[in-house]
Amino acid sequence: MVNSFHFHPYKDTKVSTGSQISKPGISVTQCFYGCLTVTRCQGVNYHPGNQHCFLVSEVDDIESQLQNDAGWIFYEKKEQIKKIDVPFTKDVNIEGEFYPNYEKLLWKIPEFSTAWSMKFKIKIKEQPAFDAKLFTFQTDARKSIFSIIILKFDDSTENIIQANLTTNDGSVVALTLKKKHFVKAISEQNWISVHFKMMKMEGSNYRLYAFVNESNSPLILVDRIDVEKPQTVKEQLRLYHDSEPNSRPKVLLKDFKFEQFETHTWMTTKMACIQDNNLDVIGNIPTINQCKELCEKYSKCVSMDYNLVSHNCYLSAVTKATVPSDYHEPCYLSPDSGTYTEIKRNDGAVTNVEKYPRLTLQTLPKWSFNFYVHIKIKQYGIALSRHANIFQFVDISNGHNNRFPSLFVKDDFTVLYSFNTRYSSFNPKYKYHFYTPSISSNQWYRFEFEHKIQQDGSYIMTTKMDGVVINQATKTGLDFESANIPGPINVKLGFADGGNDAAKFHIKEFFYAVNELDD
Image (cartoon, rainbow, N blue to C red):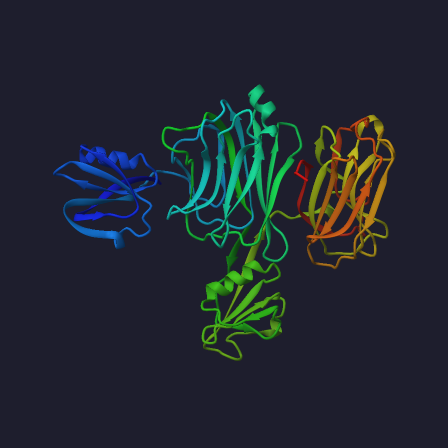
């Protein structure tokens, strides 16, 4: 679909409020053209007798501002939809090179979820002379949900790309990518990859990350922001290039990919209910769809009952399959008003690490002592009699098996995080171990490990579990300047030992990035 406009006439009428730009002595066609070249223009006041044209904008409600005025005609600019053949799928994959074009429709999306990943490559051929949108996710009502803007920049400018996300309450949060990460790519005319990732945190909180990297280099974490209420849009969305007319930035784009993770499917609603087994009971919920939205935001919720008369919403962590004796069809209390349905969640790719003993996921060309590692783990079987390895970053240079960050689970289900430089040329040798509280079976836990060299030369190592700092250590006297930065580094996943007694773990959302966040 692409958008074009037509002008709807209101005879003997004009709009006298808002911002008005006078253009005397022109034809009605020229008046229309003037409005089309101004994005914010909502219509024109035109007098055929004296050929006077006023471009009208910044009016909240056009119809309420129409006033009778003989001889004048107000033409309201309205969008009309012209069908073209564009893909219509949940995820987006645009391969190859392309330039941004004014309001070119790239894709249509049935919905916009709260957890997703977006990647694309960019080559900046010239410094933009203006701010221009590279991509815009919009609803059919032209409401922007997420946009990526390349900023006007010069030698004194700090930022180069900005991403704007509209939250559920209508406010806008922004991430920025700094010019320093693009200088080499611009001077050498190389491609650089830009990656945005929206991930679910604890409760109803989410986090939006921004990364960049050049070919064969690890991700660089350049910005992040926590979002309390991200926007979930169930209606159709448009993915545009949306720069201003005649202002296409001289940048080349390549291999745009957008994947949604947290999309949910609801099963057929039945006149039934589950007795007791409630995570929560919320009253005065007007519709069943609003009850579903509450369940979607609660990660443990897998089914819900909704009473059509009392408007009570019952959220549950069980289903009719897991508690068949408590399931009643029709509902035992209210057979004519009790409804039941289940949610099928798609929360992203899950890996069973039992199947991957010491699998090398990636080889990093070198190591950075500023780093950030994120992972979610869930234990669902017995533990080993010794440590079970979840991941290791192993230095394979010169025959060393130096382990930088590593994560293990002990037989008592405590989690051991280790950072070890004792086999490297790093001076002095350093070993940091920290044990977290025990974890329970069949429950997801999120871990973050963040290391950063401070301006005073001290080294801060922070461990978070489910968003809470559970350990922070500061080390001084480490000689980073003369250290021989090791590499290559193998990122390994899985256990040191296998066998029938292997612990069973699921992991997801595992990634590593060089940490270049501002302190």
